[in-house]
Length: 487
Image 1: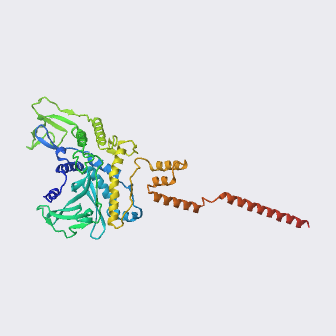
Image 2: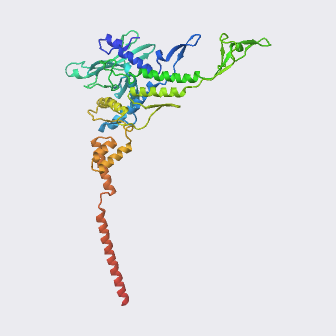
Image 3: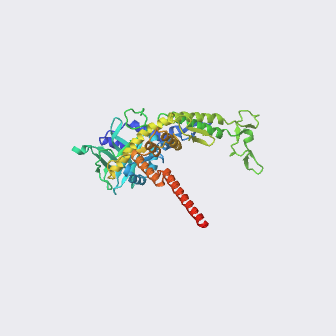
């Protein structure tokens, strides 16, 4: 089967080196939890060589899941002013909350991911979520990918095809030199020949001077290929720690599997004997694994002996915890992130400190994700015909500081005259200055309606004057009544 990279090279495109994609294949194996060269091994049992399969903790996927949940979860806020309602509709149709979280997870595992926006046949905005092994940079400057091909394999009938969406800049002349074009290619995977595409046009002019794709990578330096625009896996430099976790865990499980009780039986006692009816039968059931027949050349006088080995559970649990701490530290989460106990691996959920390794690495990675999301929204607005839009992206800070703590701090600062109400509303509601100003106007209107701004002192004085007048009138009536009685 012809590779996508091979087709691009034959077509005259420049792509990144093969070594980068070979590392992606290795990271993918660890993410899937099945590394052929490591998790399968051979061992001699005294009579023959047998193949064993190593027990696994699967920490590579667990770490990627946790990073995805920290970077892009349900508390992510994306605001685009008057385009808000339409944006939320488009994101909902494209299942953005779920698929974007999955893309972040794959980005952490394979080093690179991409959002790709385009219009379908009905003119609706669509978003593709592309993983690293389907991303082929064609032109890059200072680490930023300017032109890129996104590939996928498709099966039609009995034949396999390669579908390529190539985003290029400057195919036309003059003003069109700065416009992005999208080339759609369908290639037969066996022959390498191009095939006709009936669904979409071969070349589409986007009319945009900005790319309709956003590349996301972990915000760490690619120390495997310094010149590559692709990123590296979050655990690219922690393969040894992943191995140590699985090695210790495998030994831990085997401690129970191999440490069960054994009873050593002399070979003479285990031999088959002839019964009276002529049927042969062993003294011991051969399917019973508790008994172990000892060879006769060891000691003919060997008696039946019980062997009950102690399980080294505590030592293994301490070893696994140490391996998890080192792995967590190497993957940017600091120590103590994972706790191993009788129920398995647990994730710490306490609020993290703003001086911890996890906090610093989290803030560093949100820089890349935030820029990508802003450009994603701008691309959606362009394709939807809205035009320029101001985008505000806020990430989940609840793991750093409790929401109630933020509210209480702002209330105290406003009461002390150390902060404006506008700034307090912006931080608490995570909104823009314009939205905060509108909120203040609503609060002021509600205060007037509820009567909080009425001067109750004047009303009280008026009530007292009316009460005094009524008392005087009553006294006058009583006095006139008494006089009439005397007459």
